[in-house]
Image (cartoon, rainbow, N blue to C red; front, side, top):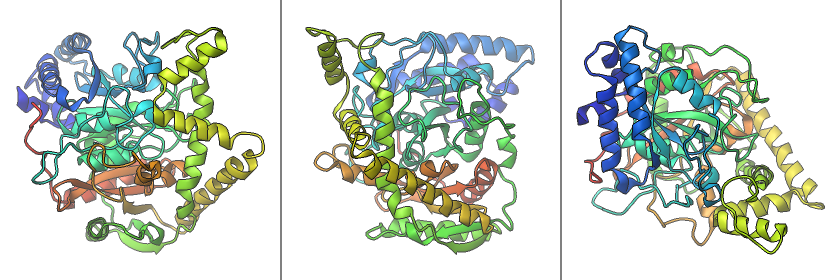
Length: 493
């Protein structure tokens, strides 16, 4: 049955509708694959009984010809999404034992459309990280390995469990979230496809908050078509989320393979950084050639405030995190560490419950919001954010349909190789991705091939607000032109 786990989401959907196999067979194959791949630590919580029960219900619907858009398709869910009756931890000790009595809007829409939940996926604690090493439950190990080496590689973060599970065929697709690159960087590191939709396209209700003005839900899948299928079910207006945008959800899958002839693609000079890998630069130029060959027009553009984006992001995001994480105090749910009085209980609970990176960001956030520093840091960062958004608006106003950039400054690095002595070294992994969150734009990452070390490289497409369809058509053109990459042998099984 292992061949069933090798199917794309679209192929599995078509196979179920053609009755080539049952939803129960498809789900059982994935449950078995998950059990054999625990060495990757991609899943924090496996839910095989729940999955098989949902698959049986899907088989009954398929038999009656009442299939829904995702009928019987097994998915992994990032453990930042609240799932009714299933422990949701955000990979933090402070939420140990928390079982929500409600379902996030995005996952409820997936179940509405017939999808099957295999379990909850590992992540950086509270989505704070770029390598999935800050999880309280241990790092996720990428299914990829460097050429000629058995060293364990990071899958990227924060959605490392989602990316690793999709790459290793432990689910057909997965939900993820992106605050500063947490969908796109792991997709680039694992040879998968990920999209951060426009801010407001997917509901944030029921997703554990990191930075509310930056967070956005999105999918990671194995190809552009599967990502488009997932986004159609995940997107939509939600009156429970005040930042949700009330506009129709297009048929994103119809955009896959559409002509890109005449589309104007901007190449920003500011993304060519000092010290950038020659392989990354070469891939970027290949991406330009692939889009040009598909009929797109290439133009040079300037996004002059790009170099301010990373420092501004690391003021805005921790500030919002310090506010959002104030609710975790040991009073109503999750971990509680007793103390001599309520203040001591708060202090003991938060000290024991939060990991080092989360504590660091809470303290940075509290500092930049404090009296005397608010104007110097937070207000200034928000002004820079406005300038970054205006840079993109100017490019789009000049007729640019999308922007092509590298996705990451390097290929994936080894577990323990970065950030232990200098956290900024880790933060630099987000250098190509944070601008998209600061401006609220959609961004798609597509694999571009393998580097000389045998690890995947990705290209990023940045689009106009709510024009994800353009990104899917351009991403499909790159996917068709780029060399196909095959995952290494499943050494983890």
